[in-house]
Image 1 (cartoon, rainbow, N blue to C red):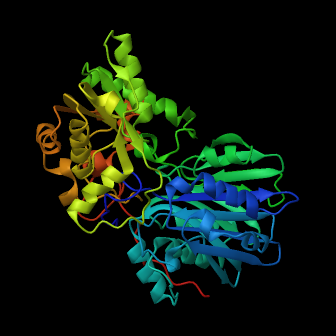
Image 2 (image 1 turned 180 degrees about the vertical axis):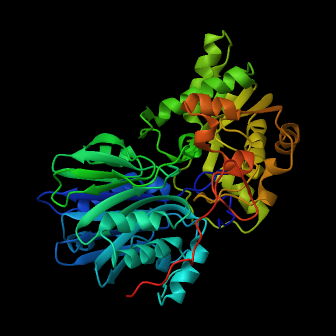
Image 3 (image 1 turned 30 degrees about the horizontal axis):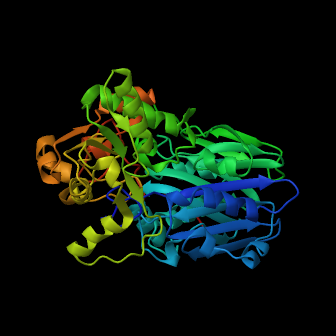
Length: 493
């Protein structure tokens, strides 16, 4: 289950990130520093904790700390992480506590060897799996669902080889996951059968990389090979010479998270063979086609609105509109997550601290302001007021996603239904609440068209209220049911 969020977090007014995972297998050099650089490239996906687990062929080494990557690791920490293969993780909590006990990768030693596991996503049936495993004598040290996967996989490895053990665990867990796993010195990657969470394969000079986004591969001067397929297991050769692929589970339809392209992924990452930046520009062009308004200026909410605004302005100019693209809001990048805002007045002050209008761009002009999403609406209201205060004559809000009407259970820390402004308000009522002259969202069909996916192959739960997984109390958008847990006899430890 996902918790609510505070609008003070990373992107003002937007959902907070998921997690980032990476795994490398190299021939002839330690993996710690490439993993460290990769985690830096994935820092946008999680800022609460960072960790690396390596294996030197004899034993497993682990270093996991709360905080940003640069704070979590020193030179001595990296020097102590011996071995040419390893996995890494950056975390933003979506299930479990905000504490070191839930930081990852999760590492465990058991009779069949050592295991490290890094998880991006969220399981729907973690609680029932945990109850079953506790009945079998497994002791848990955290509240997160990653430890549940690790214990289940360790249990299966007592009776099965690596590939069969992973398949057996995949048949028992229900929800979204992209995993990098280290079993002794072997690194493997697994993507959930619906492909909800991203994972890709890259090649570097002396080995192979698994990562949540291709930007991490770019950081290592590597080359993107391809996305890991939904339901696929990829096993990297420990010497970095290649990898093996096993299609363990197949589904008729995928459930790719459309919000990866809207907001989460770095714009310089490639997902589904398409540069995320170009997808966002395409969404911006569609936004003009569906909801264009000819104003003097179109400007993004930095940074996530920039590519949308660029595509929107380009499409507008092709239609002979007089709109001009301009940067009208400047962002203070030194106001971080730790800024404390206990009162409404201070929360409003936070917007002033984070964003400042360029008066000459705004004063005396009609403005279109473009953002990726509206969650609670409080920040959008403050941004509109900020532009009016700077002298704008009109402020029109355009959003590069459909209205968010329901929470996410798949690994995004998004508000509850009661806190989502669009869950019980029409577009006109939301417009009235944020005090804009007009408001326009992108349609679901346009999102699917730009992503070149059918709606049946996307996870649209947050904008339809219907989910691709069997979640208690929620509607589904397909024929799906969670696995029956507890039907098996316990395995011996």
